[in-house]
Length: 234
Image (cartoon, rainbow, N blue to C red; front, side, top):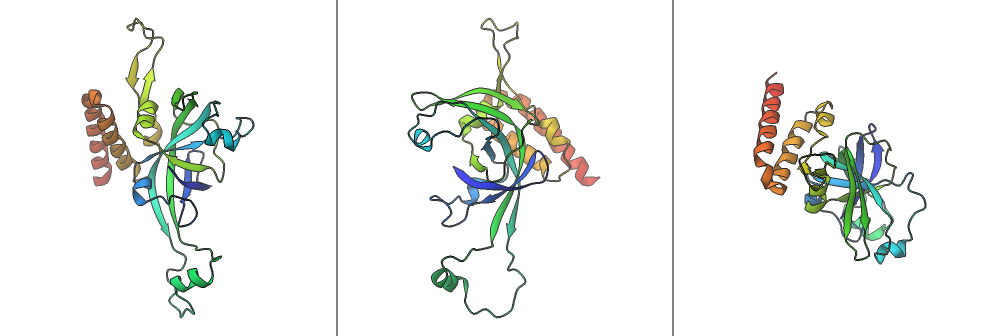
């Protein structure tokens, strides 16, 4: 589901997204769609050549690989420029919408997204998406203003964390799939009081998606909970 578009960046990996409001899209996103700790993705348009034909995309005929930047929502800001303006008004909000349909509301919901890595997907002739490659860490390319933010489903989140090592000698098939969280040092290095909490939220999601790795995830979760307690108490 598309929930908004990029309107600003604070750094190469931190972006501000404005959530689509009423009448901006056919299906308006709800609070659950941009909840704290939600994984999202943004199509990287730079360096991908010509834009695909919209008709081919709609009909599922676009078979070119698509590169996405994968991020997580870690903060939400409610913007209301009219707050504090307590003077008299000639029209209330309902009347403004009725008599001035072209009026642009300045209220907005802004979400902050930290980019955690990259993912390349390709759609086959049957309309199914396949992950070609994933990368955790700081991406080389920056995102563009106006790029749309999409939510990720469980299968896409699982694929983003499921790596294969073709050089593993212990696997006779030449590849060993394993759970990977290579963006953790990337998150720890950032100075934001909400990031340890969003890390715990990420681990909660991975515990549900990777029940076979509960022992490993519980260790990581305890370490982060201890780190958060120490930093809070000083």
